[in-house]
Every structure is written in C-alpha cells, then in structure tokens.
Image 1 (cartoon, helix red, strand yellow):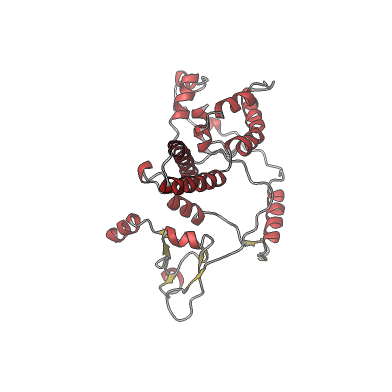
Image 2 (cartoon, rainbow, N blue to C red; image 1 turned 90 degrees about the vertical axis):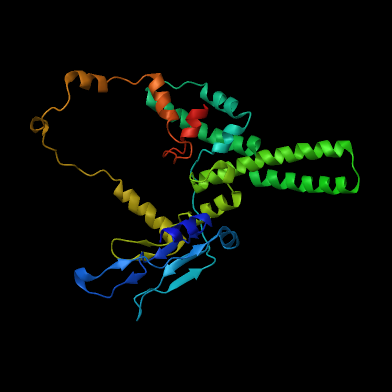
Length: 309
C-alpha cells in the first residue's frame, strides 16, 4: 500500500471530487456489525482536468454487489450569485506600485479604537485594490496572451532575417513574459493551496488542475423538513433564509458563576504578565511566523499582505 501511495504522489494523480454517498463499500452485515469504507476511488491527472475541469464522481446505490457503482460526469453547469468575496492575491506584492497604492489608501486616519480603525482601513482598502488590480496590475491571461503573440511574431521575423532591434525587442518581451509566468504560478499556487511542492518543481498546469478539483460548489441543499433544493436559484434562496434565521439573537439563560469551584493554577505575577499588551516586535515576530501560503482570514487578507506592508 505504501508503494502505491508513493506512485500516486510521484505521478501527481488527484482524486476526483465526489458527491452523494461518502463510502463505496459495505460488508452487508446488520446492526453494529455493519462496516462502511471508501475502497473505490477515481484518480485523474492534470491533462484530464484540463479537458474536463467540471468533472465529478458519484457513488450510486448498491444492488447485489458490496461495492457501489461509480458514475463519472464530465461536464456540469455552475451558476454563481452575488459579488465575489475579496481575496488578497500574493502576486500583487511583486508589482512596483503595490506599496504606493497601499500607502495612499492608508493615509487618511479614522478616529476609533485601534482594532476598529484597522478593520475600517482594511475594508476601505478592498475596493481600492480591486480598481488597482483592474487598471494597473492587469489581467494575467490577457497580458500573457498579448506577450506570447508578440513573441511568436518576433520569432518568425528573426527566423527570416536577423535585426538587432528585433533581437532586443524579443529579449525584453521574453523577460516580461517570464515575470507574468511567475506571477501566474504564484496565483495558481495560492488558489490550489499546495505547499508540499518546492518552488522549482511548480507547474502551472498542475496548480490549475488542483484548483479546479478542489473548487467547492454547493449543488444541493436539504432543509430540516426533508425537502431537497436542487436548482442554483433554490439553493441560493434557501441558504440566505437559513442563515438569516440562524443568526437571529435568541434569549440566553443566565449562566451560574462557577469561578469559586476552580482552583487557581497560575500566580498573580504570571496573570499580570499574560494581561500585558504585546510589543510591536512580538506582533511582528508572530505575523512573520505565519506561512505565506496559509489560508487568509475572513476579510480576505492573508499573512503575505501584512509581511509585505
């Protein structure tokens, strides 16, 4: 089994995302003797996911066999609703105007408590970064497409006849394309959240495929009364209604004070030390200890943002 797992990892095979039942095998026993397991899986490579990015797998109901049949769907239509949530892209920090953009948005002060001021400034920064990404940083695919087309034309010209101007233009264009390729790799690596590959081995195709296979899409929703919502419109409406009711404040009963039943385990000196405000150096050290490829917070800003700024 270890050799098989090593083979899967070395060939970069990925498990196809599934829906429906979680297990594919049952021993056919009853009561507490019944056992379930996920013995059957679908492994695909990056080339497959490039052709079928929306492919999924489903375990069907068992009839006579103790194994469930596997149904693989190659294409599926997805609908999205609302404005996409903000997410800080690590590739932004590589741009020469990134810090000046942040500084310009950070100058206007806000009168409030420190953490509230920070939250308000981050909130104000989001639309500014969206506009900056669109107008200054640019779209990766568009920029790379333009540079690749220009590079191909220059190669054709140089193959026919050599000119120093064309050679210089070719080298500059190739250097620009290399920069955009590195930024695409950073973006795809962040989306795929794969840190176990070293930077030198990183393949944009692999990261793009892993991002597709890990895309979480809610296709169905079951209500408390047993009703299933299956269309994108119904799922969207049902989710909004559920969480609206869930977040309504309910009256909470008074909790008895049990402090007297707990024996003190730290000294007054230790307690005072724990209550001290951390120094700027401690905050910086803790922030820089967070891996840059870790998941961002609820506001969309990850550790790379704070380390770069």
